[in-house]
Amino acid sequence: MNARRAWRRFARRADFWGLLVFLVLFFVFMLAPIVVVVVVSFSDASFIAFPIARVSLRWYRRIWEYRPFMDSLIVSLELAVASAACAALLGVPAALALTRSRARFADAVSTFLLAPLSMPMIVLGFSLLYYLSWLGLGVSFLSLLLAHTVVSIPYVARTVAGVYRGIGPDFEEAAAILGADRWRTFRYVTLPLIRPGIFAGSLFAILISLDNLPISFFFGSASTNTLPVVMLSYLQNQFDPAIAAISTVQMLIAVAALLVVERVYGLAAMSAPS
Amino acid sequence: MRLRAIPRRRRAAGGLGLAWTLPAILFLALFFVLPLADNAAGSLAGGGGRLSLGYYVKLLTDAYYVGVILRTLGVSLLVTAICLVIGYPIAYFLVRHAGRWSSLVIFLLIAPLLTSIIMRTFGWRVLFARRGIVNLLLVDLGVIERPLNVLQQPASVIIGLVHVLVPFMVLSIASVLQGIDRRLEESAQVLGASRWQSFLRITLPLSLDGIGTGAILVFMLTNGSFVTMLLLGGGSVVTLPLLIYQQFNLTQDVGFASAMGNLLLVFAVGCLYLQLRLIKRKGARG
Image (cartoon, rainbow over all chains, first blue to last red; front, side, top):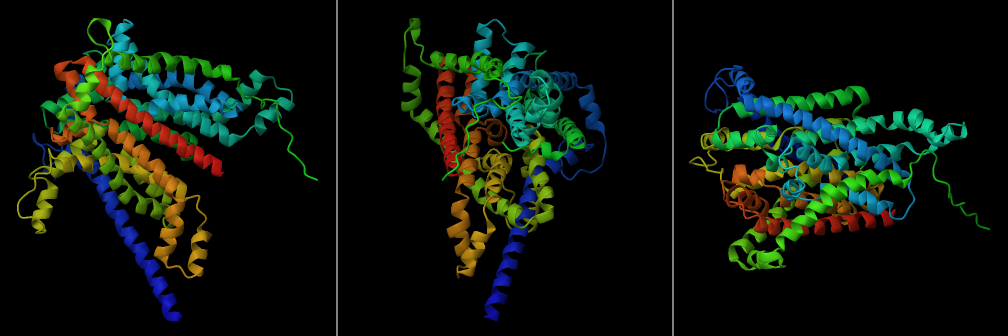
């Protein structure tokens, strides 16, 4: 009996250590390509080698001076913020209405609002290009904005709905009982409560938009090239550490955005149940 | 005597009317549904405004294109399977063993999602280069004699895709594992089941929903991706999205690209349907 218990304990330990080793290997796999790029970005060689011989900021200077990178970074940032704002304007009211609705087709509407997530983006981009050209919008910032908003709506709606569902109707009912009309209830009770959801959902949308290639690719022109599009064409022609440097900058922007949300609302808002 | 809950007919205070969903619905109808419908119509257009299945006949009978379609599905299946095999133990560790380290594990899982797909592809290219660190290490360790050429081959595409998609699998499985009552497993063991038996007969079947959700998600996302194939495959793995990209860039055969896109869309709708059925089943079970 004792031997059996000892064997059990040993087996449990072995399970644990086995899994732990697997976990460590897994994270080496997950982080290796990222760490490598960050290291290479500080290289001073004109070719790519890892590990690097000397540390320098040469390639950061190069991307600063290389117009297409900086121009497209600005386009990307403007596009990401603008499309997240549009998605919030459209998606937040919809999410609020659907969460508390008991209508039978509310589920169907929710599914519809989330549907753009499931569609292959390259097909969406391709179709939108011809459709928007037919509407006379063609390759323009407005076209990009419309296309990115389609993809951003699900992220905002899903996050806001998750937060709103978690809050429950009690606060709003209390406000109504105390005599607040619907507008005041919304303005002074609902909105402050769901603000973390709006913020986190918009941030998701911004991050997704910044990294979007399959849609932006179709709307490329000198004035509407987004950063990923420029990076792709650069990578297809050259293979030097400039890509590493601009990638690292892009990652730092994402990390900074995440830290802001962390500081303001805590990560709990980010992991809203979907 | 039984008490019945009184149905609440009144709309919850503060809840907005469904009219507030109209702007979003209209927007998506205009810029999501109509473009895709337009694309579907374009794929059926023959000469002189007639309907024609010509593009689909070409797509589904030409051996080359049939090969591309099968490869698309095959790559997605393979990536899904690998993500499952790698992701399940990670999810299990996260839920059962990580304890106070779990937020670190989650952070490490999510962190790669903050980096662009181009950055990661670039990273693999540096790592797998002929004289890159992976080859040097393997030669030094005596695992291989000469440097391998992994790049521009299917293996690197699969590795790149798994790297991008495995976090989705882990998070899907972990969220279901979280909800499984540990006492079920413990009771099985008290009743004499070995650890493996209790895992195979209790935990694994109970986590099937998470596996399903994760698998559909990964399959769907692989089906639509082309950047990894483009930058790591070097033409060795041609799938539907890559072919659409090439058609657009080189030949500009819009109708045919529309047909390929539409086929991809059909796959996606199939996945979406399965996903909804899974959610509904979960809901029915409570």
